[in-house]
Length: 180
Image 1: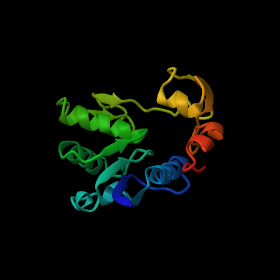
Image 2: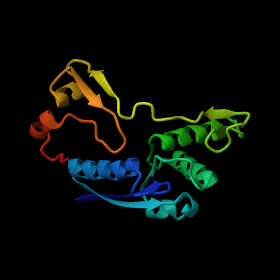
Image 3: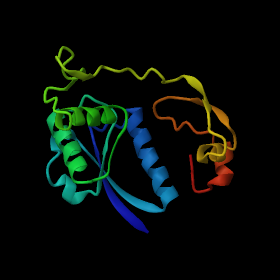
Image 4: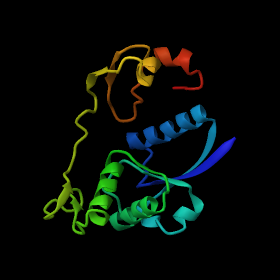
């Protein structure tokens, strides 16, 4: 079986639902891909150059602000410049944008409102998870992969931290390796 080592960068809290959902998503992916993932949650205070010696990919966890913004941005930049797989969700993706603003676009003072709400170059405003708990009708392109998975051209999904918003009625027969 193939294996990979992933560092999840952020301030892990077992009671924070997005962190539990991140762990669940990795378990589901490992099962589906038939891969073993060695996963380490690493606080932003603990980020160092050894990160990329010991891990083949990084995930920028939800749940900002982080303890050490500069170390987080350093890790994102290193991954980008060295072709290390890097995925950011929610606040993690916001920090990937911030890193690009500073190091690709040249806005050295680009800032996130969670760290400095009165900064002169706010690239990321403080965001609330406005979709949490809401239901939405999703429309899929006919004959697309997602419409095949759902067995329909539409579905109603409920968004919320910690939930995996998938109607499993059709998935159980199509993808038996996926488990809830």
